[in-house]
Image (cartoon, rainbow, N blue to C red; front, side, top):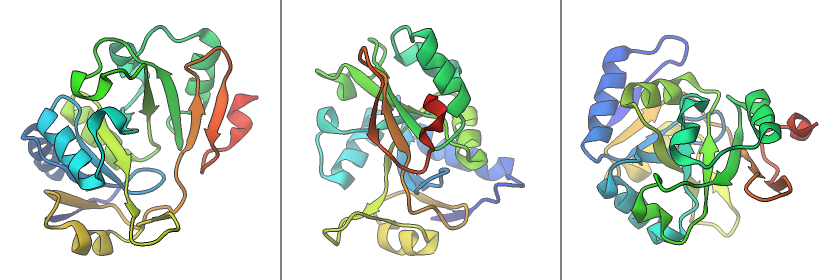
Length: 207
């Protein structure tokens, strides 16, 4: 199913339809402020397993992000965040960043295993944040990219995405053309802050 959503005028009826799908263990492809992403309800083992199958990876090996609507979800899934890290996150988010933080025991067991960290995202995209807000908990998420080539390329056209994935996911949300650059990944789980990947987000937030 291909659903159209306009970021400047979001239909609450369509959001409710997406949330119902997620609560039933559905898997969606949705827009962020960077690239299109695969997503499911973080509390649904069924959704997590489906996404892992689509990506061809084991849950404990997956580099998923927790997509949140704001920073209020942080304490639910992470250990205490140092003040200097929280200041950076407040400056950077919402925005095209993934922050790697120490995980606490509330992270779903299917994902955690021996994992001590999680990635947190609060995208600057009203569509995905409205979905998360209405769902009431984060979306487990991973970037959607084209595996048909040796070069890592990200899908940007939602209609092309729908043609390729319509039999594998429950919904593709068309929020317009996506970006081709992923988020900037910043690891704040250790004693030093480390830039793991420089993407769309400027590193000036670290200054």
